[in-house]
Image (cartoon, rainbow, N blue to C red; front, side):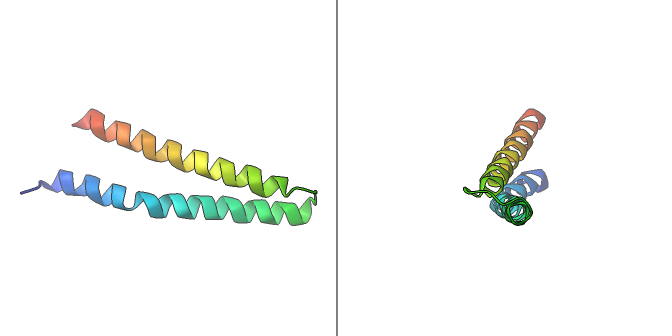
Amino acid sequence: MPTKNHLNKWIYFSQAGLQMAITVAVCSFFGVWLDTKLPNDYSLCTVVCSLVGVIGAMYSIIRKAQQMTDES
C-alpha cells in the first residue's frame, strides 16, 4: 500500500503537464500582446516569451523533482 507521502509525489507530477501548459500559454499570450505594442517582422516577442515560458516551466519541474529525491 502506498504511503501518503508517496501519493503526494504522484499527485504533484500528474499536475506537471498542466502547470507547464498554463505557464507557456501565459507567456505566449504576453508575447502576442507585446508584439501588438511593439510591431516587428518576425513576432520576436512571442517567440522569446514562449521559450522563456518553456525553460521556466522545465526548470521549476526539474528543481522540484530534485528536492523530492533529496527528501527520500
